[in-house]
Image (cartoon, rainbow, N blue to C red; front, side, top):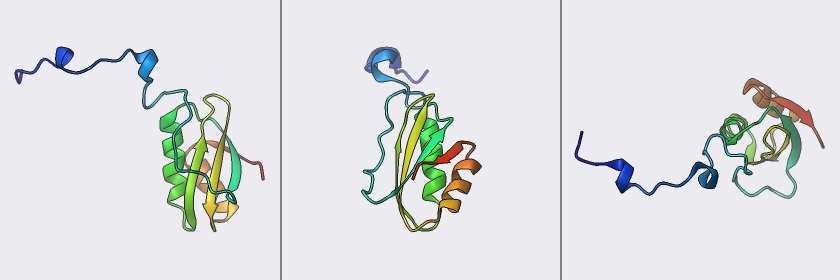
Length: 105
């Protein structure tokens, strides 16, 4: 060992209090939504990692200025996209990431 006992030197928090960064059922914290952004409903997102995957895919689309995801684990999550990207481009990014997409405009 390196001489460090991490079990006693690191502050430990019970999992119920902290939640897993990947599997937290709390709303994923994202950039503030633009008031005039396009809003879509997504299915299949179950955790913060899912939301990050969709955010990364949508952010890479040309014309996207901001992305916000309101995560509802196991339910219908809301994706808000600001910018000039087409609905088809957003649809392709979301489905390419492996999630179901339903427009709610």
